[in-house]
Length: 279
Image (cartoon, rainbow, N blue to C red; front, side, top):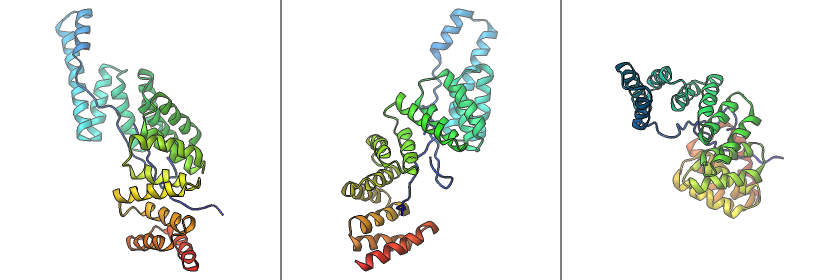
């Protein structure tokens, strides 16, 4: 019988899993209003007529407004500001990125993908965009394409912990624990205090028989999030089924029962309690 465990997805639009798992959004590099070098270039090539200066001023105002909208987190303001920027410069990759984020948050995956691909054309080395495109593929239930996108993000930036975490979550979902362990280790080197990564890497190692390492990771995760239900559940499985530390496992279960386990956990909890009592 297949062992049950819970994966905590660390997916983000920078910077997946079943529909019940949470997706997060990361907006990538901060927008900047420092466009002085571009302004000087435009003036030297096209002169300094009032009409040209007004176009430049409009572009600067649009970028400034978009940067402010992103800082405020107001989605509708981001949409308006990004649209304003694109009216001046249809190839502005940051505005295209922002519109992709806007549509992703609304669950409009095809529209989000359209803008992310347009941004990618202007900024092909962006690992963030490849990661985000991977998430749109997941939203469209095209898992194979999502894996390709996450891999491409890591290829472009081996330090992209978010893309590595996303890819590792997918490998766990497919029960490919060897590949999951490799990419999740990469992710943890850059983000060692991410509870989701700690949990998922522990799941991968436990299923590879590396119980002591998995236990250490679960302990680290619980220090950061003492009431994490999925971590408590997975740790209880490790303690009772693998390490035979029944008393410690029952302590995890009792805490989980106090917090209120999910419906999917209840049957397994009963099995674990029975096993612990028989040994």
